[in-house]
Structures are given as structure tokens and as C-alpha cells.
Image 1 (tube, rainbow, N blue to C red):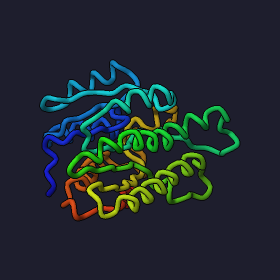
Image 2: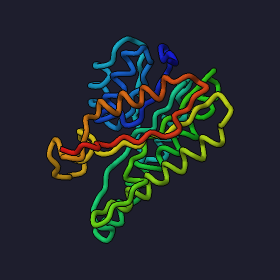
Image 3: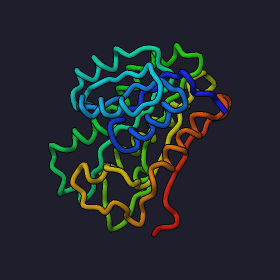
Image 4: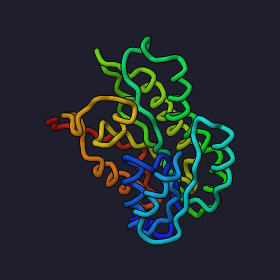
Length: 236
């Protein structure tokens, strides 16, 4: 296993859901976490839950390009970037408000690309660095009769970005991987007003995703889990 102790890790969107759980578990492995969010109170709440010392935070909104460039561009000494931040969308495309599409794009795709570009110089100074992009099975499996078309398009973009970046850095000391989860038992859907139960038949415990991501990050540097899909195959 690759030891993550003392590795400096930025988890975007880490004040709730999967990102929050992942930041906490990585801190237990000795990582120095950079918590990212848009609200200082929520950031402070997560910081109190982290094990160990030496953690920090960055506060910026992916829908404020100037703020994002200023705050992310100021980070240094990074070993691992986990592009986790995102926003759900579902329903017929004609029902989506046009003004919401740029927000969805920035949250799900542009923010990850811009953050990666800003932090590449720092990552490339590490002896061995990693980028893990959280996409979604919704970006690679298009449903029939039920739609999340804009979200699917953006997560498809995350897949393309991940695979192209992996080829760009193939054979170098930067490992790029993609994680594709199905629906999890988090606040992800309720945050945008979706009236789902705490557990729907197709959902699974987000701790499974945390364990999967840690598995990916701790493989021998010669090995890359290029892509991992995680779904509930025993729905109930």
C-alpha cells in the first residue's frame, strides 16, 4: 500500500456529503487536509472533525472565477487533488432555467478543470502526486424515460478530462484516476430540492465510496486504478 501519511490533500466540496466524509477519513490516515467550501461556518465545522494537526482551508465559489483563481492559485505544497465538488440536476431539459446552466457547468466541470490547471505546478513539484476526479455513473449511462441531460453532459465532460489528463501524464509521477459512483445516501439531492427519502432503493452508503477512493489512492505508484464504478446492484 502507498502510505498517505503527511500527504497534503485538497478535497473540493468537502463541507458536506462525500467530500466531508472523505476529508475526515483521510485525516485519520495522517493526511494534511485542505478543506474547501463556500461558507466559513461549515468549513469551521469540518475542521473541528479532522484528526491530527496541520490542516487548512480554502474558501471560494466555483461560480466566481476571479475568487477561484485567487484562492486556489495561492495553494502550494500539494500532493493530492480530489475534484469532488458538484451539483445535481434532473428533469426534462426544457424545464431547466437557462440561467441555471452556467451554474451547473461551473460546479460540475469548469471548476474542476480550472482548479486542476491552477494546482498542476504545485502537484508537479511533489515526488509523487495524484489527481482523482469524482464523476458519476450518470455521465456514462444515459437512462430512458428519466432524464438528467445537462448533468450527464457535464459528468461526461469530467470523464473526458480525466482520461485525457491521464494520457498526458502517463509514465510520469502524476497519477490521474476517475471515480464513478451511483446515488449515495448524502445531502446531494436534497440540497437542490429533490424530495428523495433518506434511502432510496438505488442508493448506497457513502462510506463505500470513501473506502473505494482510499483504495485507489493507496495503490503502489506503478499501478493506476484508471476508473472505478460503484453502484448498488442489490437494490432494496
